[in-house]
Length: 351
Image 1 (spheres, rainbow, N blue to C red):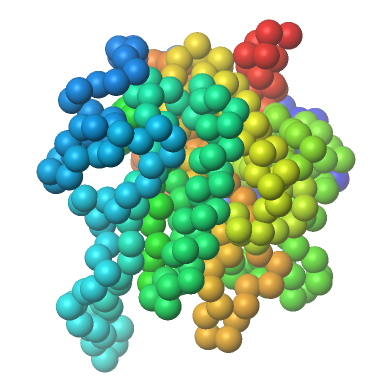
Image 2 (tube, rainbow, N blue to C red):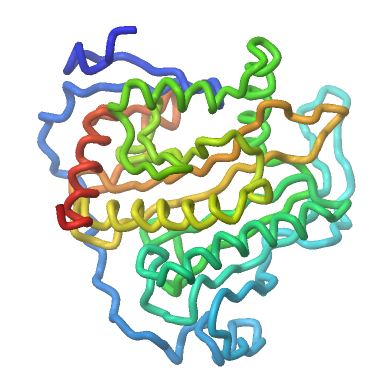
């Protein structure tokens, strides 16, 4: 297959095999002037403990509960959860299927990565970062063992630009009674690919990307972070395990350690792109529970990074207009984004 970089400047669209969605790539638009809004992020005050932070050790949270004087990873039930363990909402489905509703239950937890208020994941000590990865696995195992949980989604919103309500280094864990729609779409597409080929979709995709090399950004013995061929966000990354696994609970101890190192390298790489604390939404897609007799064969564990910054720390990408009404669109090609990220990776590593 001819590399897309062989035809620079030509608009085209690319298929996301995980979801079936398309993205329009318009590299010729990079020369257009920018007179839109800028949102220069304020530099946060660097303090290791903020007496007004709801997540720092020993402080009272907004709901009144006082945090223990924790010294490592701290996980607790969200005081203001989006889901409850019980819902009295009834099923609703009119005869023609236009007004349909059903109850949804679940658990929402918060995971504090560190007691230090001013450390991002990339700045944690190696052992601290590894402890976070272990906690992700432990929480997944405990929640998936519940009869009322169908899927566990672990994610982090970093930065006010991404809606983070607190700068303390933390993420969230949502366990849901149904399979979230994005995860379901990915699970169904991977299942269908496996039925057709007998192979895992993401394993085949990683093999292809490894041979090409043009979109790989960070790699270790067990993991790869790359700009996906179908990326919609400017500096989007997909994190894949070299050994096909379905969930965080399937990882060996060595793979957990290796993953922590790769994610820290990704964080430092992002921050070096525009010399700013790079905002993003990051999250894991893990194999859901069997549904309707389907065991989701071929599902591959993976993580997504969706960062909004486009041209600088001042200019972000918005999904608006045609992107909301038609198809997501990007100007910078995934290959060019990968090159920018690799150069940022080398700067962050002092090369």
